[in-house]
Length: 316
Image 1 (cartoon, rainbow, N blue to C red):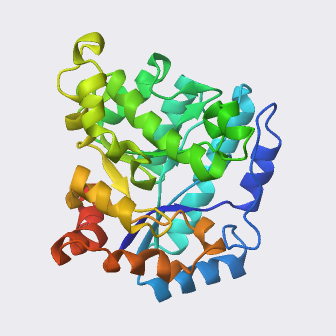
Image 2 (cartoon, rainbow, N blue to C red):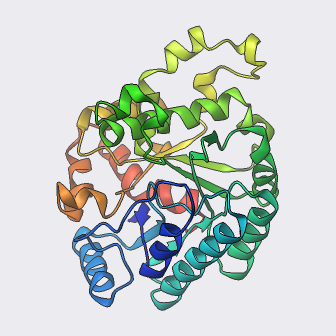
């Protein structure tokens, strides 16, 4: 089993992003094992063994991206992130892979780091947080990133920023984590559709976390009220949404996974944990074992847990 959605935050990288100007940053997930200390690495490997997870795909979590208006500092932080992720993969090549982190919104520097991460460091795809300095990463200024990844037929994994979708209706009620991240997930899917990104860059494999938030519940409504004519869409929004892939992070919700499987198909859902975030609520083993209890056909459950990820990630 491959955990496609796991986080890793070396101490030196956390220090680097904490120094970036004018951007809210996260802190280490203490006492959870997300850092590069030897005891954290050992505990992570133990958790993986207990959960039957053979491989984790690593990237930074919400509020831990190196996005900053200071290009020099942002580039240095992104390079450090990628170097340290690659170092862990080199130490434990059977247990980890990593995604490239970019110094957005600096496009030329990001293209150089994307090339370095994929070609020199051997990373398997790209991680983008859903917005960079309050701009959706589906906006036109980021198109060169999609062009290059499309040329490479690459993998693109999105992650929420954890900013409550910049809405006082969310943040003033303390709902950034409980609701805001799910709205970010749905929003990036809709932004991609509205900007016709999958149509223009069809050779990218797009992965949206947390089952797409409320997206699987909205497909029929989108087809009715998200005008194909107005946005010059080549196909109904529901069709494009079914081209994306989605991970299983759902806090154990049988209803959410059932809805997503019915909406997207089991072959478009792959295992994810948000490691180590959910350790506050459940064991790492439980993050996956509940999936086999969902009232779906046994073959669908096997597809979700074992078959989809290796194919999508190119790790067969």
